[in-house]
Length: 142
Length: 326
Image (cartoon, rainbow over all chains, first blue to last red; front, side):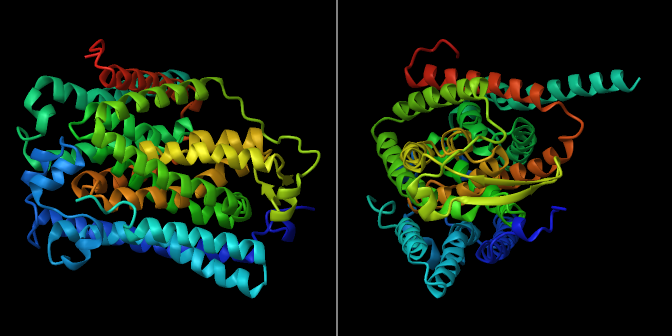
């Protein structure tokens, strides 16, 4: 009789590997989110832009907001992790990088299995996500 | 007695929902400077307000069967004093976190299909980047253009939710060549029906073409795109509704990643807004799943459609500068 543990209903191996990697990334990201936000709100680390000032300018468009607060774009935050507001970008980046890491593991699996179609597809996706993450497309203009 | 209690619960839930959803608007209306720049209120008010608001949104989204992002962007954009750039940035982070959290469970149960998601994700995530860049460009030109377009899209989503009739197990008589080449088929065990369900897809090329538009809209408005993913996967490509819903949710973890990075790199994600929104929506989703057994999802779905129409029309009103809805 067919059941939940029927072999035909089981997830493919690469799907399970992807799920495990995803779970790890999500928990790391969410844990880091709570820790860094607590550090930010309690003022344990000084902020580049005081919180009260953020609320005064968040009704402005992003270009104007960046101009009045003096913040920069792209990955510049990575060099300023000693400031509470920038520290919050660590969990954002973790969440944003999780899928890329999962795809890298997936690529290794497909290459090993000599699955050319999916190897190319996954490699292209890694390229797309990496370009988006690099800031080449979205970080300029300031 | 139990019926009376159930009725009272439903009325209280409906009243609570309306109260929380309209509270920011009331707050802004009562204190205009607050709406203008948030400067009149101490900063520490905003994280708990966002947390509670997004908690309710999370509960409602699960009960109505929609993603958090589709409610978050029009409602927070319409009733909070944040610029639409930051609302879309936070909206994408909210949708991304929710999709990432749901992904592992859906993949392990074989409800979400990695094979089905991979080609679709490649198309959608590439177009989401283009959509995000277009959105930021239009917003820099005139944010009212984005408001009006968002309004039309949200109203369209309301119509789609009102009219769409998903098919539980679409009949796919013959797989197309692309579907066969990609191996877009699978088997899962339906716990409710206690049966094994085999599925395969067709019309792959048309489906992928539609995901170009879906990716663009997801990036443009920071909405997530479950509202569009599910009908395309289910009605066009022929995946069973459970596989469509699960794969769509997982798909968002990839599509929204590309768009979220564009917004993140452009400085559109303000932690003070994004973090309580993410945490609130995720906690709300957890509670929403538990409430599914005691609340009538159809009632909530109707309410959400009404809220979407209202938020959409308000965005159109603001975008076109009509001033009819305040």
